Image 1 (tube, protein in one colour):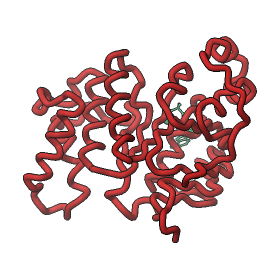
Image 2 (cartoon, protein in one colour):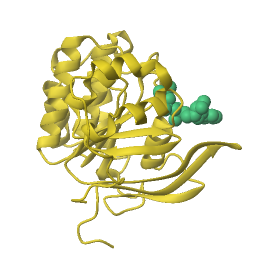
Image 3 (spheres, rainbow, N blue to C red):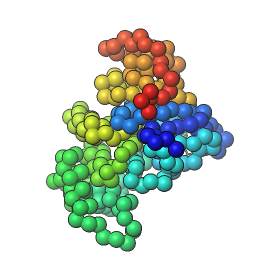
Length: 263
Ligand SMILES: Nc1ncnc2c1ncn2[C@@H]1O[C@H](COP(=O)(O)OP(=O)(O)OP(=O)(O)O)[C@@H](O)[C@H]1O
Ligand SMILES: [Mg+2]
């Protein structure tokens, strides 16, 4: 095993639902401390990749390593903010309970949370500016508020690697800026973030690296090397031509191989 393993290593992962392939021979190495945007059209396999990294789905071929370990083996390593559509919002649970759930993975199920757990949960809620809503039912919150609560749960876990599936979907500009600010602070504390993101116009500004996915890893690297006209047209078709023309930077570098040099 590496003395200094990559945060996330995906090796030749192939997986399908039934006989339909969703990811084909995907490989990428992500170094620690990066804020990575995962981009690609609907159905590209972004959520499936996240589920493989979490160990919820087992690849048919290949493997993934999280900080050098098989996924699911080290609960403390990885935290997850699900895509909103995948959460049952009618489930009767308060904001405070959702965030405290982030601490339960650290203890045997029968043990009470410590005062330090309560404090970690309270601090996480404060960080996302939702302390005033601790006793509110989570189903009664707005979409942006719900998103912040799930971010707080992930932060409360204290994980080294955070996986976020479209945390900015359907939130207003102010919430978007505040979530990005929080994520940057998490990154600056040395943690690694993988964030599924749909808005190509903000992708370069928000992320250190982009992973362009469409069944395969089309490109991985600094935004300027990934947001190239030919690559985007290959993935999104002609629909993005206007957007590409409007992207502020006109990237020229060649796409990098799929790995972080520093990993
Ligand atoms: N449980 C499932 N059973 C069968 N097919 C599935 C299942 N989950 C996803 N798929 C299919 O796998 C493909 C990839 O789905 P996935 O959810 O990974 O895409 P995505 O990139 O996250 O898309 P989106 O941007 O719409 O969230 C899609 O064609 C989808 O219909
Ligand atoms: Mg998805």
